[in-house]
Length: 247
Image 1 (cartoon, rainbow, N blue to C red):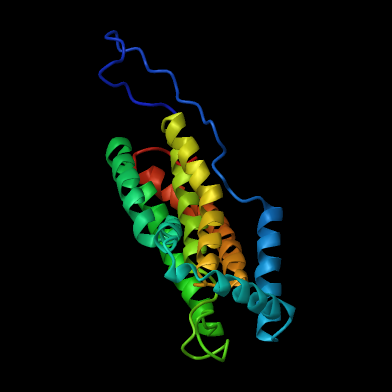
Image 2 (tube, rainbow, N blue to C red; image 1 turned 180 degrees about the vertical axis):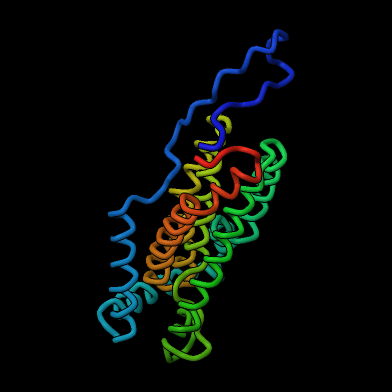
């Protein structure tokens, strides 16, 4: 941990005694090896099945038929459901992360939180769009073909974004010992946020079910990669920049 103690504020004792450490009330959320293995297997198996027009594509079509019958896009429920999709929207998450990272960088005098977020964003952009343009899968609303050069539906970037970026936010909140309320809030966003995002995207027929599932798997894999890079490179550089010896 780079820091586990909250700095003394205005309300601290006048004698200069250090404030009590804020406890870690949730885990930092580093994916375990078995979860990474499951995510890799799911990503590979689903991709192979879809490219071979297998059973999962038929499942997607059946679910899409049911969802289309709901006609949420032309109902009063559209905007509330659309708002839920923004839990995984890059703009929404970056607004929260900008405040969180800015505060941490200034208060703790280290650029490590910013470096972690930028690393995650770079990996997310490269990997997700490589999948999207490599497979060329079209969205449910596209007539006819499901794999087309103009397709960019697979996997869901919103779901991958929710898993990875809320995961990084939760990690920062725990490592830098933010208040228990903030830690719990970001835990909920990192766990429930991707689920709600995926359900909302499928409900509006913006994405196939498998788009959401693989989006979550890719997000887990990328979160594991960012944690691994941090252990090997990022935190060592960050510790040096902050004037602290590497862990």
